[in-house]
Length: 158
Image 1 (cartoon, rainbow, N blue to C red):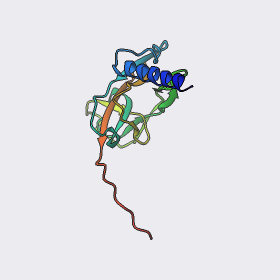
Image 2: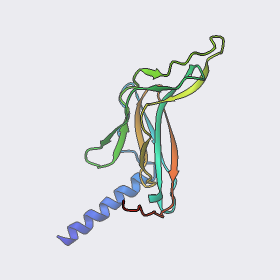
Image 3: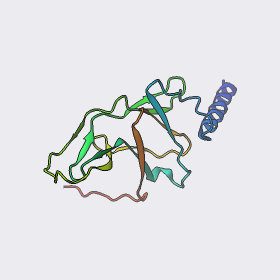
Image 4: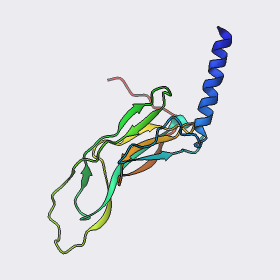
């Protein structure tokens, strides 16, 4: 029993090390028709628990520069059967919404990246596995790295 458990642990570690190289995306199937697979391999950092990755999905379009815009849609988190790894999927980019401020009708449109609406989508920083997203064709993904110190502050009772 202990030997079988030891062998299982070793094989699991070997499998995870091969996926972490970024060369092996076997766990992440190719994108379906009309979708594109995006892969982000994060660099190794000391104390990765103090970092988060913000995924920002949207599209660059020509639009006025004054109103605030957003697309409908959501990032779905899925576990890949048989592997246990997470992939992120946006099935469709919904309708464009935004504010309706009056603008100078002679001002030319500008190219702007318009994201999905909602709160920032933060995931755990993990350099050992790629961050894999499946998005409709023509949709972009950007990311930001958030960091903090490992220090925490107490909150007073009251």
